Image (cartoon, rainbow, N blue to C red; front, top):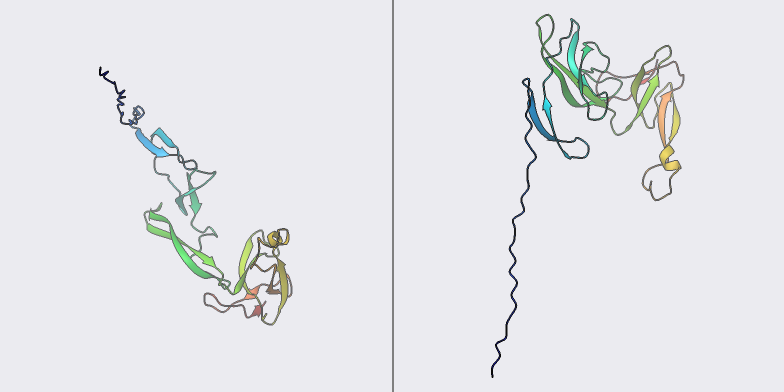
Length: 203
Protein backbone atom coordinates (compact mmCIF):
# COMPACT_ATOMS: atom_id res chain seq x y z
CA UNK A 1 0.00 0.00 0.00
CA UNK A 2 1.45 3.21 -1.07
CA UNK A 3 1.47 6.11 1.40
CA UNK A 4 1.66 9.49 -0.25
CA UNK A 5 4.45 11.63 1.08
CA UNK A 6 3.96 15.33 1.60
CA UNK A 7 6.69 17.76 0.75
CA UNK A 8 6.68 20.91 2.79
CA UNK A 9 6.91 24.11 0.84
CA UNK A 10 7.48 27.57 2.30
CA UNK A 11 6.47 30.58 0.29
CA UNK A 12 8.23 33.85 1.03
CA UNK A 13 7.08 37.15 -0.32
CA UNK A 14 9.80 39.75 -0.80
CA UNK A 15 8.74 43.27 0.07
CA UNK A 16 10.46 46.08 -1.80
CA UNK A 17 12.33 48.44 0.50
CA UNK A 18 10.55 51.74 0.72
CA UNK A 19 12.26 54.91 1.91
CA UNK A 20 9.68 57.27 3.25
CA UNK A 21 10.54 60.92 2.85
CA UNK A 22 9.91 63.18 5.79
CA UNK A 23 7.08 65.67 5.66
CA UNK A 24 7.85 68.61 3.42
CA UNK A 25 8.44 71.93 5.09
CA UNK A 26 5.75 74.53 4.81
CA UNK A 27 7.42 77.91 5.02
CA UNK A 28 5.62 81.19 5.48
CA UNK A 29 6.40 84.89 5.09
CA UNK A 30 8.14 84.34 1.75
CA UNK A 31 10.71 81.97 3.17
CA UNK A 32 12.18 79.19 1.03
CA UNK A 33 12.47 75.56 2.12
CA UNK A 34 16.11 74.41 2.03
CA UNK A 35 17.01 70.70 1.98
CA UNK A 36 20.73 70.24 2.48
CA UNK A 37 23.30 68.39 4.58
CA UNK A 38 25.14 69.38 7.73
CA UNK A 39 28.51 70.91 6.82
CA UNK A 40 30.42 68.66 9.24
CA UNK A 41 28.63 65.31 9.54
CA UNK A 42 26.80 65.25 6.21
CA UNK A 43 23.46 64.41 7.84
CA UNK A 44 20.28 65.68 6.14
CA UNK A 45 19.11 69.09 7.31
CA UNK A 46 16.04 71.03 6.27
CA UNK A 47 15.00 74.51 7.30
CA UNK A 48 13.11 77.60 6.19
CA UNK A 49 15.37 80.31 4.83
CA UNK A 50 14.85 84.00 4.26
CA UNK A 51 17.74 85.76 2.49
CA UNK A 52 19.10 88.83 4.21
CA UNK A 53 18.79 92.12 2.33
CA UNK A 54 21.99 93.11 0.51
CA UNK A 55 24.46 94.72 2.89
CA UNK A 56 25.01 98.46 2.43
CA UNK A 57 28.54 99.78 2.85
CA UNK A 58 29.54 103.42 3.12
CA UNK A 59 32.10 105.22 0.94
CA UNK A 60 35.56 103.64 1.14
CA UNK A 61 34.24 100.17 2.10
CA UNK A 62 33.14 97.08 0.16
CA UNK A 63 30.76 94.26 1.14
CA UNK A 64 32.16 90.78 1.73
CA UNK A 65 31.88 87.90 4.21
CA UNK A 66 33.83 86.63 7.19
CA UNK A 67 33.69 83.36 9.13
CA UNK A 68 33.06 83.95 12.85
CA UNK A 69 32.94 80.21 13.54
CA UNK A 70 32.95 76.80 11.87
CA UNK A 71 30.15 76.46 9.29
CA UNK A 72 29.17 80.11 9.79
CA UNK A 73 29.41 82.98 7.36
CA UNK A 74 28.36 86.58 7.99
CA UNK A 75 28.24 89.65 5.79
CA UNK A 76 30.36 92.63 6.72
CA UNK A 77 32.05 95.72 5.26
CA UNK A 78 35.83 95.87 4.78
CA UNK A 79 37.90 99.01 4.06
CA UNK A 80 39.16 99.20 0.48
CA UNK A 81 42.71 99.65 1.79
CA UNK A 82 42.83 96.56 4.05
CA UNK A 83 46.50 95.46 4.25
CA UNK A 84 45.59 91.84 3.38
CA UNK A 85 44.12 92.83 0.01
CA UNK A 86 47.34 92.07 -1.85
CA UNK A 87 47.41 93.00 -5.52
CA UNK A 88 51.06 92.14 -6.10
CA UNK A 89 53.68 90.14 -4.26
CA UNK A 90 56.68 91.73 -2.57
CA UNK A 91 59.70 90.78 -0.46
CA UNK A 92 60.71 88.03 -2.88
CA UNK A 93 57.34 86.23 -2.88
CA UNK A 94 55.71 84.87 -6.04
CA UNK A 95 51.94 84.93 -6.82
CA UNK A 96 50.24 81.52 -6.98
CA UNK A 97 46.48 82.24 -7.00
CA UNK A 98 44.02 85.11 -7.38
CA UNK A 99 40.59 85.36 -5.76
CA UNK A 100 37.80 87.86 -6.40
CA UNK A 101 36.66 89.45 -3.13
CA UNK A 102 33.96 91.65 -4.62
CA UNK A 103 32.52 92.49 -8.02
CA UNK A 104 29.76 95.08 -8.25
CA UNK A 105 28.90 98.71 -7.62
CA UNK A 106 30.26 100.51 -4.57
CA UNK A 107 28.74 103.44 -2.72
CA UNK A 108 29.21 106.41 -5.01
CA UNK A 109 28.22 104.44 -8.11
CA UNK A 110 31.58 103.19 -9.39
CA UNK A 111 31.68 99.66 -10.81
CA UNK A 112 34.50 97.79 -9.06
CA UNK A 113 36.29 94.43 -9.06
CA UNK A 114 38.44 93.77 -5.96
CA UNK A 115 40.88 90.88 -6.26
CA UNK A 116 43.49 89.55 -3.84
CA UNK A 117 46.65 87.72 -4.85
CA UNK A 118 48.00 84.93 -2.67
CA UNK A 119 51.80 84.94 -2.40
CA UNK A 120 54.31 82.26 -1.51
CA UNK A 121 58.08 81.89 -1.28
CA UNK A 122 59.81 79.74 -3.87
CA UNK A 123 61.07 76.29 -2.82
CA UNK A 124 64.65 77.48 -2.33
CA UNK A 125 63.62 80.25 0.07
CA UNK A 126 62.76 80.41 3.76
CA UNK A 127 59.45 82.00 4.83
CA UNK A 128 60.20 84.53 7.58
CA UNK A 129 57.57 86.39 9.61
CA UNK A 130 59.17 89.45 11.19
CA UNK A 131 57.70 91.91 13.68
CA UNK A 132 59.21 95.22 12.67
CA UNK A 133 60.41 97.59 15.42
CA UNK A 134 57.69 100.05 16.47
CA UNK A 135 55.03 98.16 14.49
CA UNK A 136 52.15 95.92 15.52
CA UNK A 137 52.07 94.15 12.14
CA UNK A 138 54.15 91.18 11.03
CA UNK A 139 55.82 91.43 7.64
CA UNK A 140 56.66 88.42 5.48
CA UNK A 141 60.06 88.01 3.85
CA UNK A 142 61.39 85.27 1.60
CA UNK A 143 64.97 84.54 2.69
CA UNK A 144 67.61 82.32 1.08
CA UNK A 145 68.46 78.99 2.71
CA UNK A 146 72.17 79.50 2.20
CA UNK A 147 74.75 81.71 0.44
CA UNK A 148 73.69 84.69 2.52
CA UNK A 149 74.29 88.06 0.86
CA UNK A 150 76.33 90.82 2.49
CA UNK A 151 74.71 92.17 5.68
CA UNK A 152 73.06 88.84 6.48
CA UNK A 153 74.08 86.02 8.74
CA UNK A 154 73.26 82.30 8.78
CA UNK A 155 70.79 81.06 11.37
CA UNK A 156 69.40 77.60 12.08
CA UNK A 157 65.74 76.63 12.55
CA UNK A 158 64.95 73.47 14.52
CA UNK A 159 61.90 71.43 13.46
CA UNK A 160 60.25 71.32 16.91
CA UNK A 161 57.73 68.65 15.89
CA UNK A 162 60.32 66.20 14.59
CA UNK A 163 62.57 66.91 17.58
CA UNK A 164 59.96 65.36 19.90
CA UNK A 165 58.83 62.43 17.69
CA UNK A 166 60.29 58.99 17.08
CA UNK A 167 62.76 58.66 14.24
CA UNK A 168 60.37 56.86 11.86
CA UNK A 169 57.74 59.62 11.78
CA UNK A 170 60.07 62.27 10.39
CA UNK A 171 62.24 60.12 8.12
CA UNK A 172 63.36 62.21 5.18
CA UNK A 173 62.54 65.50 6.93
CA UNK A 174 65.59 67.44 8.11
CA UNK A 175 65.64 68.14 11.83
CA UNK A 176 67.20 71.55 11.28
CA UNK A 177 67.33 73.99 8.38
CA UNK A 178 69.78 76.78 7.70
CA UNK A 179 68.44 80.13 6.56
CA UNK A 180 69.65 83.70 6.20
CA UNK A 181 68.55 86.64 8.31
CA UNK A 182 69.58 90.26 8.65
CA UNK A 183 72.59 90.67 10.94
CA UNK A 184 70.77 93.42 12.89
CA UNK A 185 67.17 93.08 14.10
CA UNK A 186 66.22 96.65 13.12
CA UNK A 187 67.11 95.99 9.47
CA UNK A 188 64.89 94.61 6.71
CA UNK A 189 65.95 92.76 3.54
CA UNK A 190 66.30 94.64 0.25
CA UNK A 191 64.96 92.92 -2.88
CA UNK A 192 65.28 93.48 -6.63
CA UNK A 193 61.97 94.44 -8.21
CA UNK A 194 60.76 91.08 -9.56
CA UNK A 195 58.80 88.12 -8.12
CA UNK A 196 60.84 85.32 -6.58
CA UNK A 197 63.97 87.44 -6.20
CA UNK A 198 66.47 86.73 -3.45
CA UNK A 199 67.41 89.70 -1.25
CA UNK A 200 70.60 91.52 -2.12
CA UNK A 201 71.28 92.66 1.45
CA UNK A 202 69.72 94.50 4.40
CA UNK A 203 69.02 98.16 5.06
